[in-house]
Length: 337
Figure 1 (cartoon, one colour):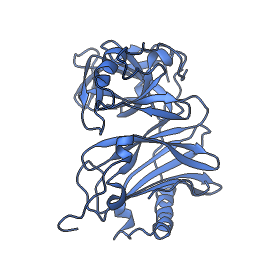
Figure 2 (cartoon, rainbow, N blue to C red; figure 1 turned 45 degrees about the horizontal axis):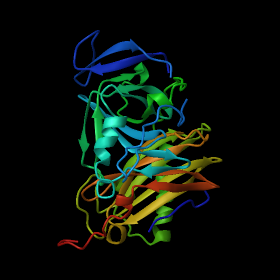
Figure 3 (cartoon, rainbow, N blue to C red; figure 1 turned 60 degrees about the vertical axis):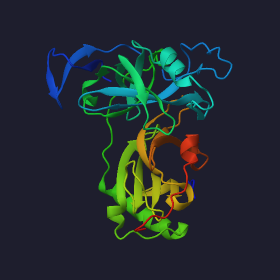
């Protein structure tokens, strides 16, 4: 069961490397200041030639990637080709044998540069050094690692969206000022969840506060704050088996006057749709239409996948979900459920 809307850079960067040069300590990684290149978000730029296999063609428009950084590495993983108000899913090997290798070879080869975005603005660049395979997704896909250049204010950021540098040549740096959720936003998430739970017929958690497992605040393109919250019942926000009685409730709220109102919610019961725990990953106007798109990471029993929500009319709607995630098998009752 799922629900939709109820009514709705500075000019310096930091490059992370494994060699020391003007060292600044951060989590065991050496960093140094370097000039940042000038670089608009869009789908123009270099396109890959279609593979002449007869079974598939590689993307010819800009591809959206998700990027993550920890204290020792940074990597990018393709989400899907940008297609109007949605994304085209990454092809699996059953329907397009050899697609993953061809994608990596043509679009993620060593030396390829990606523009990184966090909190809706450009914050740096990743240059591919090595390419492997990430099998944590329900459709395995290439994962490229490499050094990262970041503006100084974003040195603590760990999650990014990425686009090929060739399609972001005019994207300028802007002030990087991520939001921290506040008491009003935390309270709004709790209040909205307490209204929704009886409306959708979900089981009450023993503690609604303890059921809240993820919360993030962010600014929309019009400057208004939004808050994203995930609530869980008898489950955890990680890839692991779930009880059939478990569920996830994701909601996003936006301000209306002095209050936050629900803009979108997604209720997923494990026994009906399989485990799927949506949580905020990052946001950006990646298709250049003037509206914010939000990338969600969804955690299942054995794999993860992605989904996208964005404005539609007076509310928000889900415009994309990896097919393999949407088709996750229902969770069967287990001993102890």
